Length: 341
Image (cartoon, rainbow, N blue to C red; front, side):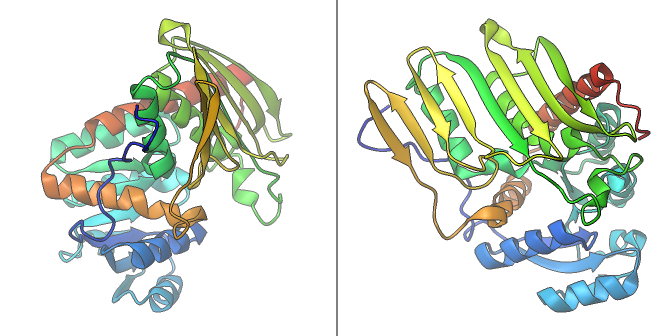
């Protein structure tokens, strides 16, 4: 790798990628952030939103200048003017909503996790293949510029062979204001809600695990509230993914290679700076300051639009998403999570 320049993130252009006509299933906080980011930074536009409460859908549409709103996901599925739907329901409804939309011929971008379990994710992937539509998980960290640049830096050999990937996503959620992350029956828990980010990040860089060991702690209701997942990957690379619902940490990530390392600064899952420490010097890469925090959600939407316009499937991404959920399934088994999904 040249020491004078950084490699390109190799992402589709946010403004030049031709727009699709988007729908949104769900009108919660993540949907608000997603559509705001999409309209602020891309040429993609949302044409319809649906929620189980028609008044809530109408209010959401009014707040974001969306032409149509519906009080059911079935009505959204029947809208011939919608090409693709962002599924932003709570986790336990991802499977049913995605399958309903796929059956209607809609492409789908499903908010993470793709399903509550790997088995659910496989059902979505199989339905998309059978119907010939595009389906992908919105694990947006993997499409952020700093993640893509890190991949290329590693590929160029700047830190040698990757030995260890360590990443953390821990947040002290308020148990009342954020009750959904503690609720036993709706796909709650640290691993599915926020632990999926460090696990996905690690597996993107070193591949699926060959073996995994998990330790942690549960809530009184049997939900995983803290977990440390240690995995061995090909060539004996290790990953250490930590997560929690009840403590705040800086949410850093470090990739250690045989002759250097990469330190991702705070909140690695959002647009972030990183330091490349190699060859006796430290160099720092910085993201576009105009796209910070959850505005980074726009990148995966544009990546999906570019794929669809080019006739590409999301098979590789789906396989990776299923693999991460297999790791989470096993981690929950080792923790003896008793919450019913």
